[in-house]
Length: 296
Image (tube, rainbow, N blue to C red):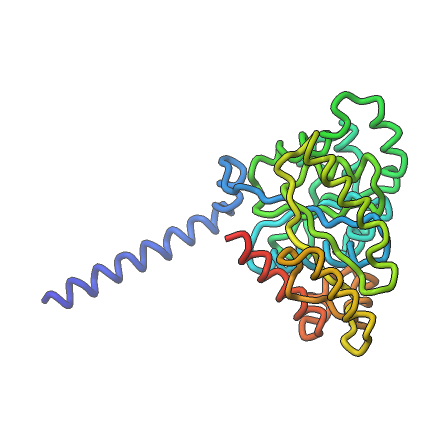
C-alpha cells in the first residue's frame, strides 16, 4: 500500500510537470526571456580584447571567446567596436543588413537594446559595427563625458548578459578609451613575431591612465599568446619574454597557427561552428575554460 502511494505521488508530479510544460509551450511563454526582461539576473563581467597593433588575432579571439562562452549556455554579448566590422561578419551578420549599430548607440541616436542582433548561437548576441565609427571620434570630441558613452549605454542592459566581450579597434584613440572605461578587465592578445612587443608599453600606459582617471577597477584579465608555432624558436622566445614580464597574468593556453581558424571568418562562423574538431577550436575551448575558472 505504501509503495502504491509513493508511485501515485511520483506519477502525479510527473503529469503536473508535463502539463505545465505543455501550457507554457502552448502559450509560447519563454520563462527565461521573461525573467531576463523583468529582473536583473547577472552580475555582468565586461571583458575588452585589445591591442593597438593590428593582425595579432584580436578579432578572432573576440569572436571565439564569445562563441565558446555561449556554447556553455552562458548569455553572452559581443560588441564590435572596430570600424572594419570583422567581428560582425565573423559571426554571420551581413554588414549593412541592420538599421542600428554601435555607432548609433555611442553618439546617442539609438538605444543599446535596439542595436542587439541574434546570431546562429542561441546564447550569443552581437551589437554590430559600422564604417561610420571611423568618424565617431571626431563627433565624440564635443560631447560631454565622451569617454563614458559606451559605459553609460551598457549599464542600460541591466544584467541581461553574464559576459560582454568587446572587440576593440586597433588604435589608442577615443573609441578604445571608451572600451577601457566600460570594461572590468582586458585580455591582451600578443602575436608570436619579432615586433610583437612593440607598442605594448603604449597600451599599458593607456591602461594605467584609464585606471587613474576613468576606471579604477580596470584590471588585466590575462595575456594571450596567438599564432604560436612550436616548430619555431622565435615563437618560443616571444612566449618566454611575455611570460617573464606578465608572469601569472599569462594564459597557459596558446592559440596555435591553424588553417581552419583562418578560414572560419570568411564563412561567417566561429570555429566551433566551422570545424569543432580542429586544433583552433580545442585551443579556444581550453582558453575559455581558463577564463571561466578564473571568474568562479
